[in-house]
Image (cartoon, rainbow, N blue to C red):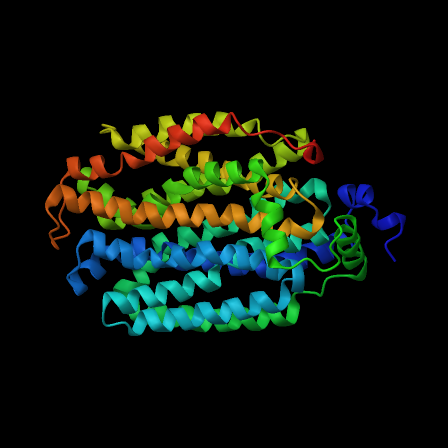
Amino acid sequence: MAGLTHSPEHLHEHYPEGCARAWIAWSIPALFFLYEFMIRVLPGVIELPLQKEYGASAGDLGLSLSFYYYAYGPMQLVVGVLLDRFGARIPLAVAAIVCAVGAVCFAMANSLFGLGAGRFLMGFGSAFAYVGAVYVATIWFPGRRIALISGFTVTLGMLGAILADSLLHSLINGTSWQIVMYGFAVLGLLLAAMQYLLIPHRPRWFMEHLHASHDSEGAVHPGMIACLKEVFRNRQTLLLGLVTGLVYLPIGTFAALWGIPYLTTTLGIDVKEAGPLVSLIFVGLAIGGPCLGWLSDRLGRRVIFFPIFTGLGVISTGLLLLDPGNAFLLKLSLLLIGIVVSVLVLAFPLAMDQGPCYVRGTALTFVNLTQMIMAGVGQWVVGVLLDVETGGTTDPSYTSEQFRTALLLLPVTMLLAFGLSFLLREPKRSR
């Protein structure tokens, strides 16, 4: 069945089953990513009410909410193997159900432990969303379009983040954050049904390519350990994971949790205005993702963009910590941060180009793993630094200087990513 029309060269240039089939297959897991990103950044909307309601210090609350990432991150390695072995249909449906259960647990929590347990389950299920969408795209889209589709997937996620920062404020003020979480549980169950019913099975020609990749490596049915070994022994994949984890910190640490408190404290911006301002990061990422993906696919280059964008990241995160003096400079720095982070859309096809076909899902999820681990650690570290500055008070009132000191983490880690990006190498397969 895998004849000339499904040769690697043909699959790089043409849609294997038609354009319409490709877009439909990708759209369902992409919607799951939109949903997942809304629940990922939700704590940034309700951080202050939670801190007051539970009487928690910044460090304790940051640790509790960061459990989302501690589930999301390690699960990436398992997700990759599951996608490689079973495809996307059933794993993504189960993942959406787990997100729904986590939303219910979060809504019913009466302690920080309960909040952490709910976030852990939501992170567990969300771990499948982005990589599932990109994995489906690698089957149904031509290879020359993967970076572009990765960018479009990110754009949908950013739409979810923008909705979370604007729409959810109104919903929570009109009802309560608990009711909103129950609504997310219902949406999760609906998405589970859609993914089980509408994501197509992997086609026969793809399975033949997969088996051929197994045979060429001397492993007919490689298991989790074999896939992980293949990824971990590749130094470029390890370095790529570290660089992308550092680049992701402004999203996972600032936009997802501490951004709104920072703007209201340092600049005296009303909380209703702070949410849309933080959303400019997501707007920048939504614009930059598909544009950079298209340009990268057009040039056949990935690595060259990392030093350029991380260098801009050092400047933009540094500007954010200064007193801008005017609204334009503040908006520009937030938008630039989003554009900088959009370089991550190139990390996923770059990771998949590093190894054989049968570990593409594992390589993809390893890169996502490092981003989520860094995000979780970043949320906690900023909270701890704030506690150090204030003596560990449970009063969520901090000074501008205290916030700026804690968030120095962002330009420092971006500078480290800038230096490491010069060690990345372009794999032959992506040229």
